[in-house]
Image (cartoon, rainbow, N blue to C red; front, side):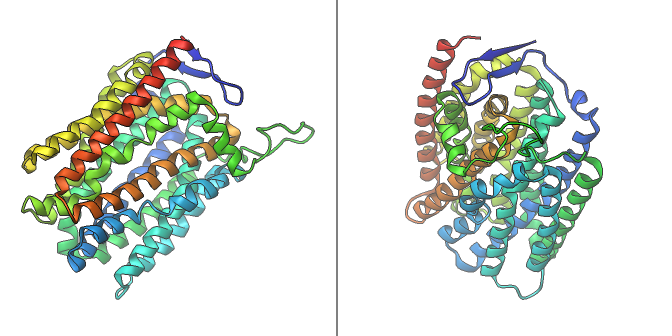
Amino acid sequence: MAYSLGCRTGVLPLTIARERAGFGDVFAVGEFRSLWLAYLVSVAGDQLALVAVTVLVYERTKSPLFAALAYSAGFLPWVVGGVALSRLADAYPRRAVMVTCDLTNVVLVSLMALPGVPVWALVVLLACITLLDSPFRSARSAMLPDILTGDRYVMGTATMQITNRIGRTSGFAVGGIVVAVLGVHTALVVDAATFALSAAFVRLGVKARPAASTKPKGTQDTADATIPREPSTIRRVFSDTRLRTIMLFGWLVPFYAVPEGVAVPYAHQLHGGSAAAGLVLASGPAGSMLGTLIFSRFVDPERRLRLMGPLAVVTCGLLSLCFVAPPLAASLIIFAAATSCSAYALAANAAFVAAVPSSWRGRAFGLANAGINVGQSLWFAAAGAAASAISPAVVIGASGVIGAVVAAMLAVTWRRLSARDPA
């Protein structure tokens, strides 16, 4: 059984399954296991490389702004790739897009691992890798609803997010130690190997499917059988109040993820080194992992949508506690508690995918992911600049307050929409 919430013309009815699925249900699907294994081997390596570059830049420059800009290099290319390159996920077979991106990244990361590569070149190569993350992630996100249906999709998404959090937590937590002991080049070699393994898992374990936007012979032209110009995708999303609101809930990430952008100067403010910075970076993913597990496993699908607004407000608002300049242990608890509430994104993700047709799902996810990543890049850069002039704790607290205000506005809109179009 399922329930539907009406949407304006141009998107599918918003249909959410009532029955809850379990983690065993999603791992029983062979294609999902292959996607999951590919994701598992690459996440930790990516975070290890990112923290290595960020710490290296800060150690050489002693500048919170430059450290934040280096971290932002992992997000800024989404300005170009998030929207423009995500169309590849609809124009070409999605498995082929993923494998091609992985193999290209093996070459790029291998170049980063060469001795003598200057810091600026590492940042540029990191930006190029992120550019390819747009079509890769769009293809994977658009493919997942074809592999898992109903609440299994939500559980599959939760599994991917938990895997991401575990990988990020372990990658960030040990990143400083690995760089100190083995050096940045060893970390990058490991990252290159993870891309190669990811390509192998996807190629061997995921079924080949035709391009989603390919028009079968003998059919009439329709809006979903052709690839529209990219502004059309933007208009499709933003012209529908419900779809726009759902996506904007996802775009709140920069407000509550800001501790990542100023983790190194924040740790130094508390008289800690790279190990303390790693703990700050790890606390957010750890809290998010716990929240995702609880929200997906123990909250009914219908209730998830009702909790989306309140949890979005709380996840940002908790960061306002940083105004009192808490010590490191208390800060880690605050960051973990805040991101545990960010599990509301599971409901937003499920509602978003239910409302978008497969033929332009890749571009829709590209737009959604671009907003998150571009927002993080710009917000982290602004936070780094602010942290050069004022306390990083104040920067984090202010980000939380601003995010809570925006989240409250979205929550009011969502409640009004739900009341107008009841299940």
